[in-house]
Length: 320
Image 1 (tube, rainbow, N blue to C red):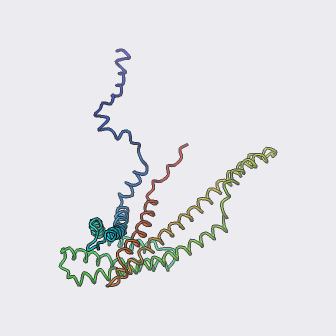
Image 2: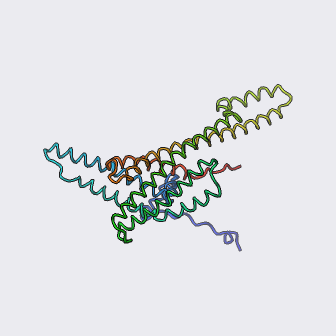
Image 3: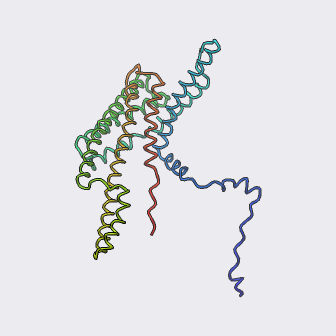
């Protein structure tokens, strides 16, 4: 048997035809890490909820702007607005639909709360204050979640619950939620105190990392000194060990910086939630829908930013 028959030639690549150019147009699109990141984040329950939340509350701001623009336009024409803008009404329907969907998605929200409270007793926080704060937060959510679910299902006629009971459940559920938010702010104060203690301990034990410019100048100075010394191998080993210690110190300070940024972001989330929960805890409310949209957007964008950062792909380890 000839070598040509034993090793058949590979087929030449197929030449694209007009059909391939049309149906296969996505062959010209390069893979996108940002798209992968977006799919990975929106594939989680939290990611979907935060994206819907930003859309829901920012829609309320859009409604205010649309109604204002509509009223100003009619005033310039010498007319008076007797009803809201039709565009604002459509956006309001979208906001209401998203709000309804988010409550429906939270109907099983009590299950992760139960899991959290079980793990809380097995792996408690570092201080008794944080432990008790999280215990009370867990109990407040155990009261809030069923109240919201019953009120929601009753409002849709699924459960035979009167309007008075629904309103009471919405009201008291919001109050338990407000308790959670207030405790979370106290939690963040304690977290920040512990973080400052860790930073002081790290500064005493390891100091601050050497600036990058000094690290770049270090090897050349060491090499000059070692050229005139008989213990060049020892000097190189000590330099490598010092470099490793610098890398560890830098990593530890970076972790503290990341934790500080997370606390600050969580502060913005709860500063957005606090006025909302107080507003919904009052029978007559505290402010209008425009302010609801503003505070909700602050909380939603802050939560979205935190989740987006936490869902980044892990760094690829270096290959030898």
